[in-house]
Length: 626
Image 1 (cartoon, rainbow, N blue to C red):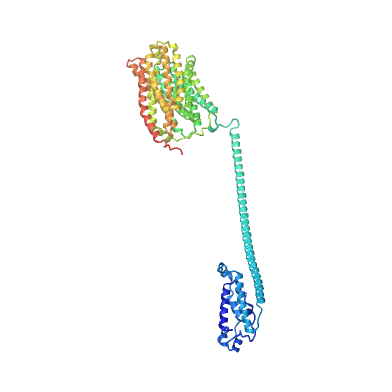
Image 2: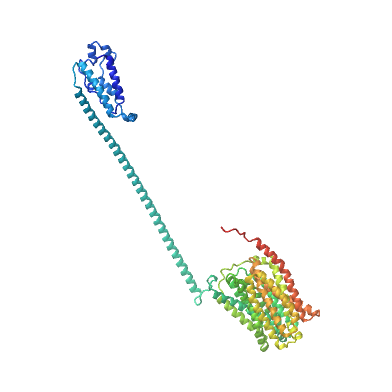
């Protein structure tokens, strides 16, 4: 067969195998070993004179090379996985088989021509199909086995990864749980230890305090604290303070009705006897600022006990006074705690009161004064006239002793009240609002005392009332004071500034009316009761205003209110004396008192305006609710 035909067939076979499936089934004629002397080998071609062309299968020296079919198989064996486009062209294994079949036919023809023998084409075709089918089954088995191995490896790797992740998660969870249990156990142990330690400390403190109470106070209960007080216990404490006010009011006014008897015993003039009243008033004026400034650090309960003790001692010394100078000194001592007691008791009353009820608490404490005017003073005067003036002061001493015991029993430790120092208390003297409020009270109450000082002459000489019935006039004044004190407390709870304005208006009206009603004994008596009511309306409102404007110096400011009242007593009596001496008559004291009340109103108006503006300037700005 010519060499050119053989080359063309090889090229065709090469092209067919390039388009075939993964695995190439080489024709039997090309894959079988070549026998020696075959014309297809280099030796055969050399023998037949075709060595020149036979160099296709060897090197230049004619050395024999590997068989042709083996070269073709090695050069044409490709993996279909590296060429995915083969399947994409619609070329199947059947097509490749057909190509192989035609190539095999040509190879058989070539072999038959070379050996000079003829082969049966049908037999060769069947053999090739069987070989091709067998190869396909082998290939499919290999691919299936490869896929199974890949799947098995992937599954095994996934299982290992899942197992490893699960193990890591379990280990982390176990570690976290162990840490949490350890922390919880440590916290519980610490808490139990702290609780045990606290319980031991509490039991130790309780046992210690119990032991101290048993050792120091074996026969009486501990004094209650302010925070432990109920409303009923607070009322008892206020009544105890009111009893002290009752004793102070009695001793203040009883001396006026006993001056004649005192002068007769000591052989002094009426003017000299009148200095007994002046000595008491001087004690009030001096003692109020001095005591409150020096006792700012003393607890309030203890201070009230000391003040009432000094009051009892002063009145006791008055009972046993051997001479006039000793009595003057005793009355001065008795007057020293007057202002401080009312100042401190007013603050204590406010501290014991409920929110919005401080005016009523102040009123209860101040009720002692009008009750003393109504009951205490007439009773003490009756005892002094019937027995001796010494017994009148003895009665006042017993009232002071009863007050001392009641305060000791009923008043709690004032835990909600802060102590101060002298400089803090004295700062009240430089506050304009405090000073103007004191001036307001001094001038306003002065108008009331301009009438009160000369009431006996007015009712007996102008109204024609018998002197034996003067007790009715004085009692009506006391009733008016009780009513005014109670309603004055109501005004404080409503609005202290408006309470002051209303009280001064009422005072001006009733004092002016007394100029006209004093000519009738009954109208004059009723009008005199209204004068007492107007003054008592003003007292708690001024007290509240002083506490509001004094800042931290409330004790001194409250005590100075009593000093202002005593100055008003002296100033009002002086103004009334000028009017009477000028020839205007006893009834004109009402007009003079009305003018003094008007002056007090003039002092109040600008101070109230300034205070309102200052209060409005510090109010927080209201923001809309979100």
